[in-house]
Amino acid sequence: MIHPYFNQVKEILDKVEIEEAKKLEQAAEKICEAFQHDGVVHLFGSGHSHILTEEVYYRAGGLVPIHPIFHEPLMLHEGAICSSELERKSGYAKTFMEEQDIRENDVMIVISTSGRNPVPIETALLSKEKGAFVIGLSSHVYAEGQTSRHVSGKFLHEVVDVGIDNHIPVGDALLTNENVSVGFAPGSTTVGASILNAMMAEAISRMVEKGITPPVFLSGNVDGADKHNHVLMEKYSHRIRF
Image: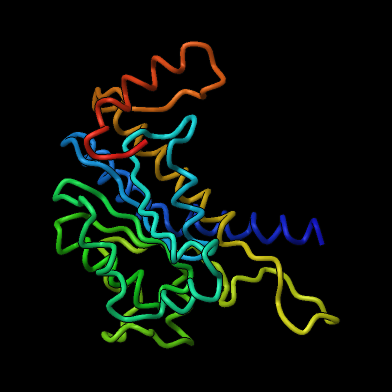
């Protein structure tokens, strides 16, 4: 099933590239504008979605002003079942979002493949209340056959400023087999990482076009990187803990 998996991923990435291009460009422009006004980009995801917040944080070749919101009870390693239960708990987002330093010139990216659970939706709404421009990354097909678990009855892409569709099928399984009773081989992390990196790449390109030097990390395994990175991190140390 190696080739079928790669083929499915390629098909989804091609669809995202074509159908989500305008939204990705809009998101990249907002990130560019945030950096022009000394803002930062926050990311939040629970369960496996939190992996994507780490994908673009403190990353060689990635942007420096990236702040992942790590709330450990939602990050699997303190208990996978507990994490899933907490994500469905209404009002829980306030327990960790009120203390977050989110400002008007910031961007918040909320990641949730289903987009149906209360915590990601509340995180998006609380970020908007604080003045941030909010981007959602989810699979919009869930809204066609599933119900939202949020009190509003809305899905993540319906409450954000820009909702990017990762085009992942319901159940996050790309493959089937007649001898297996359920779908298998998830794709949301693979596709999500590509979406985020493409978004950041476009933001960097737009900064260059505007005459702004993009704050990009050098790999720590490259000579001279420590000095380069230290200067950039010092600039944002009042907003981000590295």
